[in-house]
Image 1 (cartoon, rainbow, N blue to C red):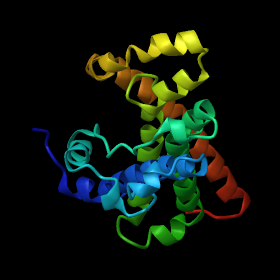
Image 2: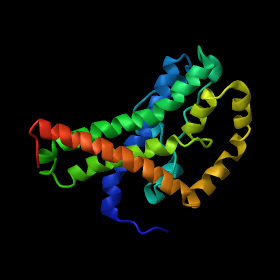
Image 3: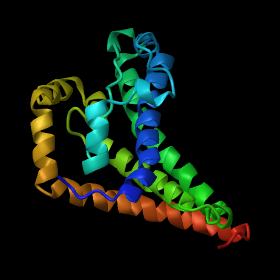
Length: 214
């Protein structure tokens, strides 16, 4: 059982819930826009967290920083263009996380003097920023059942897409091996750090141009 810092847990919890909720809502919203009413009929076209959170997956995410939400049900046959529908719907989740990370770091940089007056509020925005970047990067890994695998499948030619789809049944095992081997942590961490540094640099430069400082 990992050692839990209660303050750290409480400060990161809003970021974790927000990242999961925004991610799943984005999948549902884009699928609905692309012609599939399945997410709406399943009650997933909402920003209410309890519609998207999986109790065990959320607990795992809190304790181990590795977890999951309830997958948004979709029916590709309802899409006006199935290949494009799958591509856009799959990309929507990670893109929403990067968008939320960008908003959070901009708010943090542009309102830091105000945030610093409220205990831990600056830290909450830092968690929203960093965890959304990591969540977006993680979900773009092209291993089933992650979004990246669906993106790759939508981009591959028919024969290659079919061959890749046959790996789906082994996806969870491949993903677990990838993560526990340490390769996942190195890859995800490296890519996430590049994005974090880029967004942080832009936000600080913007704050400087506007004459906002600590």
